[in-house]
Image (cartoon, rainbow, N blue to C red; front, side, top):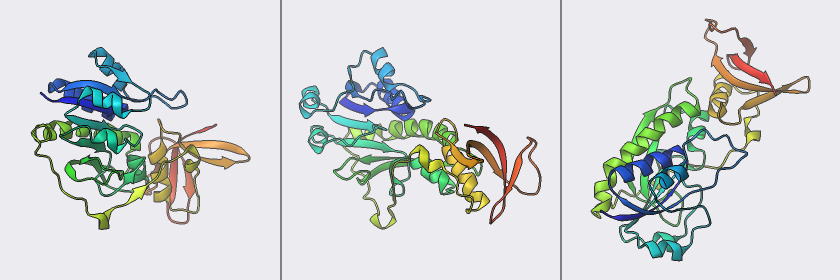
Length: 271
């Protein structure tokens, strides 16, 4: 079986690394990140998984010489949070492949699932693609879509993305290891790109419609930093909402009229 170097983080990284281990890929080295103490740790640990299988783990800046020493046949990146130098990627004769959290070429960039929910998309997914000097722009090897329900949060969608990523790498692995994963070029005319999000982006704009505000709330609901507003100088976190349809929710709620529709606030707290 082929030798691999893996760059991975978060639950998608954990899931995909688990597939490689189960399939017998000889993972010679894992690069991951140290957890940020300021970030809610809701996801599984790649570092712990690798260590439990006696796979060497590094969290420093990836170096070409360290990767080249492993003589990888293939390189994988599963939700690793940094660009990887092409000199490193070129050390693998079978290529370097990334698992991206959208249906490329839509939603290149960061926080793909959060943006998809915020924009009211009804579908998300994962894409396995060749890694190139441009982020998220390489040939597509495979994709798997998941539905986004009208009231699902970004976390709900992530929980669908994780097993979808595992199924996708499992399905594509034989072709990759056989050198038969050239893939399909992306349609640049359909490409969209979104940047990282910060907690400040959760501020509610009450001039927007009830649906738009609801989409923001569910895009940044726990475990993400949350949507918020201010009242009498106090910051109020809004964790759960519903677009009012004339039938009150079973849970007591606040009703807020927007310029287009009424929003039910089902869960909130004073920060």
